[in-house]
Amino acid sequence: AGFSFSDSITLRNVIISGNEGYSAAGLFFALCTAQVNLENVTITHNNAIDSDSYGGIVSTASVLNIVNSIVWYNFPQSNLFSNSGFVNDVTISTNISYSNIEGLDSEEEGDGIIYDPPLFVNSMDGNFILQDDSPCIDGGTSDINGDGINDFPADINGDGEDDILDYYGVAPDMGAIEHFCESSNYDQCGECDGDDMACAGCTDLGALNYNP
Image (cartoon, rainbow, N blue to C red; front, side):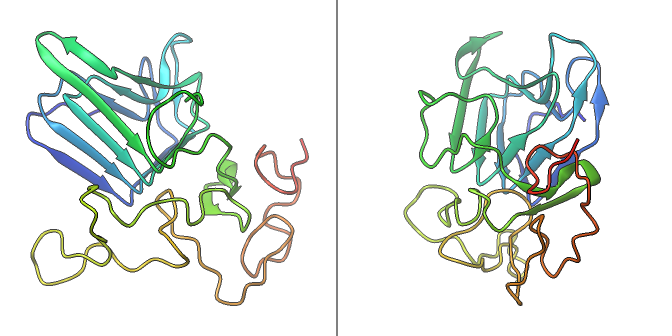
């Protein structure tokens, strides 16, 4: 998947998974003179063929803002951000907050960054619901644009309908799927009202019943 554009764009509540490319597989923002906003986005299990490339995000966007998002389990490496400086006379800035981004170290600046695996129910089988004990649950922020005002719910495009809905718990979750289990009954791999069968012998390193 790749994007190259001159206007600002916002991706919200989007799952990007299962893509393959030579040097970038998940998202590729090349020398954009625009602002890119990723809000509650899950980018996972994308594969770049070149062993020196990145499966998650490759970005030289003018401004890249990532909030309430998960970028994990992309191969062979996860992300390449141009955090600051100039590329072809374009000022580059990357801002990450309240997100779970594989490959970041503890020195990375930004509020609410989580460094542990997201604990999907079974991401190898396309189930990106968060397990009950995922660190991403309630790990996001309701103040998406950082202006100090709760953005949930909100009518983003002015059509009279809320585009951002209420969340469950004390704060929004990270990632595209808000965690909710009405019965509070989880099976042994974290699936709500599951029967322990859907993830039997799961090969997902983050699953509760990991069994290679």
